[in-house]
Length: 65
Image (cartoon, rainbow, N blue to C red; front, side):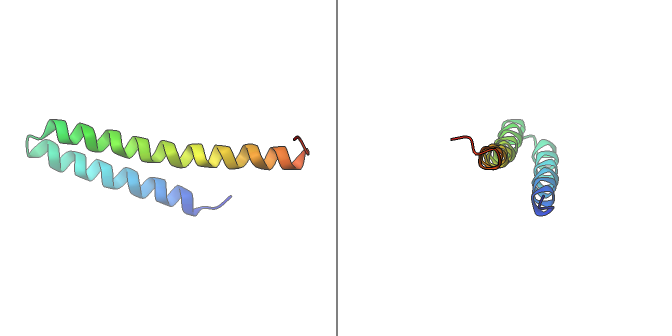
């Protein structure tokens, strides 16, 4: 497994956490919520792509067509 994807997810998490705190301190709760939601969606899309690759690999290994 490639370790880069873990670092990318961690970087997105740190960035979202910092932006969330900055926006909350500036009394922009709505923007903080949207930032958090956007971060979650981006990470979910990355994970879904990895799961799709996993299923394709299993299909190819067991020659399921």
